[in-house]
Amino acid sequence: MDPGRLHRFPRLPLRRLRDGPHGLEPRRLDMRRFLLALPFALAACAGSDVISPTLPPNYLSDAPRILAATDWSNPDSVTVTMTNFEFSPSELNLRRDRAVRLVFVNPSTKDHTVVSDQFFREVATRQVVGPNGATAAPWLSKLVVPSGETKEIWLVPARYGAYHFQCDVTGHSALGMNGIINVIP
Ligand SMILES: [Cu+2]
Image (cartoon, rainbow, N blue to C red):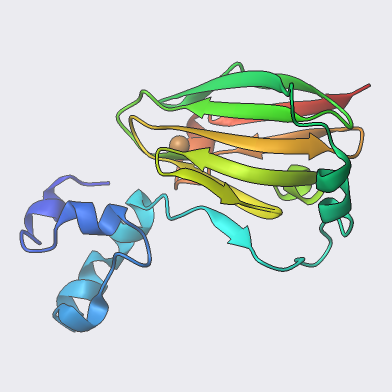
C-alpha cells in the first residue's frame, strides 16, 4: 500500500479505520472521500471477533453439551506469539476432548487475526478472554488480537485432524502468517 494515500485523507482518522466496520461511519463522512479511502480501509482492517449467537451451518451442533460436560478446573495451556508476519510456534498439538486455553500474544506493531474454517467448526468454544474480560463464544469463527494485546480462546477440540489456520488481514497470510493445529489423542 502506497503510504502517500494516507496523506490525501488527513481528516479520516486512522484509528477509526482500524476499528473495523462498526467504527466506520460513512454517513458522517463525505461519501466521495469514503469511497476513495475504502481500499485502504479494507487493506488495513483486522475487524472484530466473529462470534455467532446461534449455531452456524456445519458447526459442531453439540458444542453446548460438550462445554457443559468438560472439566475446566485445569485446562491445558498453549501460547502462540504473533509477529509481523508469523505465528510462533506455527504448529500446535492439542488433545481431543481436553479443555485448552489457546493464548495468542501480539507484541507486534500490527493487529492480527486467527481464522480457520475447518478448526473452528470442529471445536466447542467456551469463551474468548481479552483485556475487557470474558465473552461467551459457543461458535467462534474469527479472533482479532490488536497490537499489544493478548487474547485467549478456551475450547475443547472434538475431532481428530490437522487444521490450517491463518491471519486474514490482507496480505499477512501470503507473508507467512499460517499455521497448523493438530488434534491428537
Ligand atoms: Cu496478521
